[in-house]
Amino acid sequence: MIRLIPSRIIGVVAYMGLVFALSSLPASQTARLGWSIMMMNLAHVPLFAGLSWVTLWAVAGPLRMRILSVLLGCLLFAAADEWYQSYVPGRISSLGDVGADLIGIIIGIALRVVWSTKVLVWKGE
Picture 1 (tube, rainbow, N blue to C red):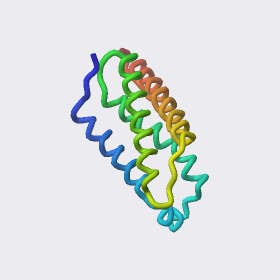
Picture 2: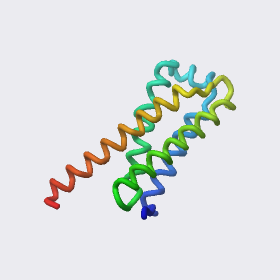
Picture 3: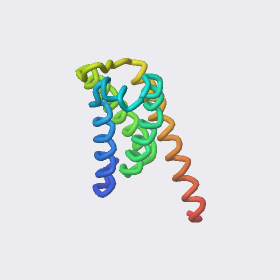
Picture 4: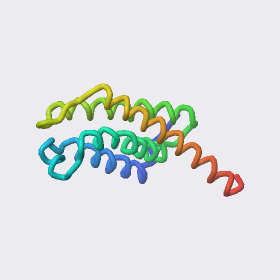
């Protein structure tokens, strides 16, 4: 059984709010900020790697169940975010972006698992 750690889930919700805020920027605003389409497409990977990292940190329970839950939850969020973007002026949604999000999610989970393992070894546990 997995459970959410209340003090940590606040960070996940804040991170999701940041992703949602970035997705809410119309194309005219992103252009004024100097963000190219290529830059915005590349940002999907680290943005969702961070989301999956912090989400895995906020979930307790058996590792396999945590990984699967975080993978599916973050992927659902990515799909919902892309759908939302289709309603933002000048922005488009694409399955390619969801694919980039998935790559980021997998990277974030892998880095978090490696990090946790290294910390346990460092602590001598």
